[in-house]
Structures are given as structure tokens and as C-alpha cells.
Length: 70
Image 1 (cartoon, one colour):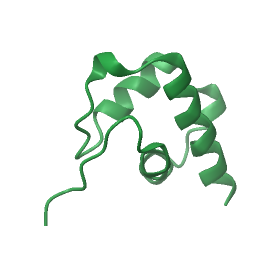
Image 2: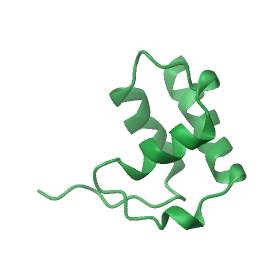
Image 3: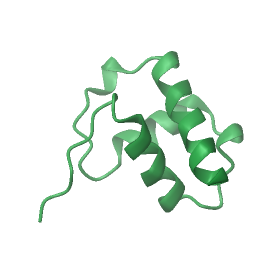
């Protein structure tokens, strides 16, 4: 089975993957440069790295915080 394809708009799924792969990381301490790199390294991520911006990264970060609290 192939990995689900993810793009920048898939904030919840990206956050879930980050929470699962980096349980020791506090999302509030992550620099956006690291967050951007981690997202682009997720298996199945097909989004254009140049299409990201601070608003998108912040939305993913907030969703990641929500995922950790669940």
C-alpha cells in the first residue's frame, strides 16, 4: 500500500505524523526552519517546499500542540 499523499493543507494529518514520530519534542520549542524540514521529510509529503509560509507552519504547529494534548 502506498503512503497517503500529503500537501501543506493537510495540517491535521501532518500534525499527527509529527506527534507520532517526535513524541519527545515540545512543538512550542521548534524553530520554523526545523518544522519545515521535518514536514518535507514526512513519507508521502508531495507539497512544494517553496509554497510554505509562516501562517501554514503556525497552523501545523498549533494542530501538533492539540494532538499532543489529546
